[in-house]
Length: 388
Length: 217
Image (cartoon, rainbow over all chains, first blue to last red; front, side, top):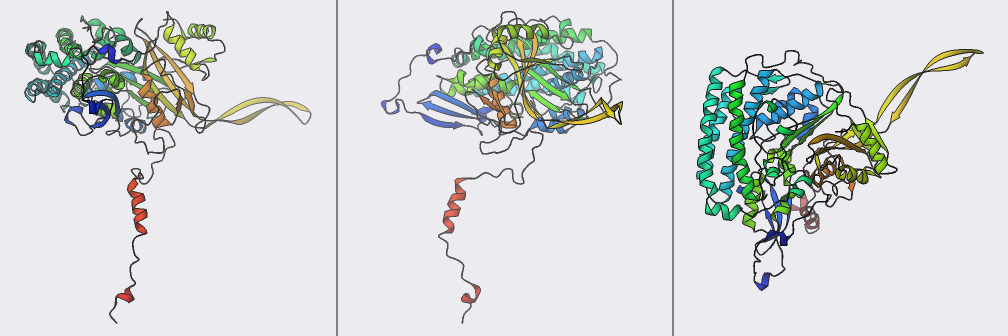
């Protein structure tokens, strides 16, 4: 199977007539790095014909700090707080992916309560990531401020939960190899349950504002269409892949953690355009709440960390392991090679938002400059993870 | 999913002449991998992607590894004739293994939902011959990740559509993820057109008059 590059003809857009002076002439524009809609310091070199994008080359590296090299020079546990800084919206899932890989590498068992806590925190992270994405996306479409503030109001409730549990809103550093750092009190669980219970009401409210909105429909439907063949070949993961109708969710496929114990559905899109990607987030939030409700009912008492795991002089056996989880942005993986020493020989992050940008040019060709911002917003990137 | 031995046998049947080795993985993760030779790499990759039973259509993770030169000491018992008598003598030989760069691909199947199958390719050495065939024509997801390996490890991928630096700036010279990388004193220095202008402008400066000339006589 070969990757099919989307052509202009496939876009079904009416031809735009341009003045004779600009006919065939390309104007090169550098969008970013300092641009409010690029979600950080991200730059795109765009060649424009009139207002239509003919070429788009993303430029990375403004936030590059060689995370992987630092990981190779730090001890295994020393990298844990640093994974928070990858995708600073979802530190809990970053922690989990790293802990999972090290647990695979060293063959560590995780107690039952810790697995439940991990599921709860990962799904809360998914909720707050998706809700802030919707806020940002509406911001990019011109709904300045108000939807973003609504989104952040409800995101802040979840961040307060994180803060009371781990001590930090965004840089949680909560997971440990073989479990979690601190236990959740019954009061915390009751508070979290209350927030999860009222969350769908807010999602419904947001959905009502978005779904039928004329401006949203005009700006997102048939914009940035992605075919399922290209999406699979380009390694697109997460909601962006499922918006194309490909049923692939690592939670179901790998069944890591205790996900096989929960009943939930995987929402799938049909057209693979920006509107589907947007709706995918709303539907996933409803499913996350379904998982959370089951987890709050089932969570057993017990230890939260495997006591056999060494904290000092932690040296996994020689070998390598690749562990992956379904992060809110896509498949987040860590690839580790141990040479028997206290720090990994190779520490690699598989960043979902970086790889999801592979098709950015294919999505944007033939659209206007204003659509580029909406398409980029729907890909859902965080530069801390893209540049590493 | 079938085992690696079976996959190896089927690759050999499908791609004649391909050299495949299995790399064991002693860790509890139990993820052994296949080393494929560079000449047939793209044919093997195409086979893995298109084969109806395997259908590894999704290349999740592509990454580089730097293995430095190392020496392995081996102790061998050798029978030797010493003073007319045959004796067993322990001999230590030091074998020098040249270093190489490695590219690792983690493959999964979205169609059949299985995996991973891990394949790796090795360069001949760490300097001039650090070349590998690009697998971007097979899996588009390798495009940015191979560029990253080129940038940070210095592996050149033949057949890559757009091989440029991706995370470091274009004028940067070394490859920072290599194990023997040393940070230069001024790593942010990059030549600019301004340097040439300054050099030219020097010709226009009159030399500063000596202090004696300035003194009123």
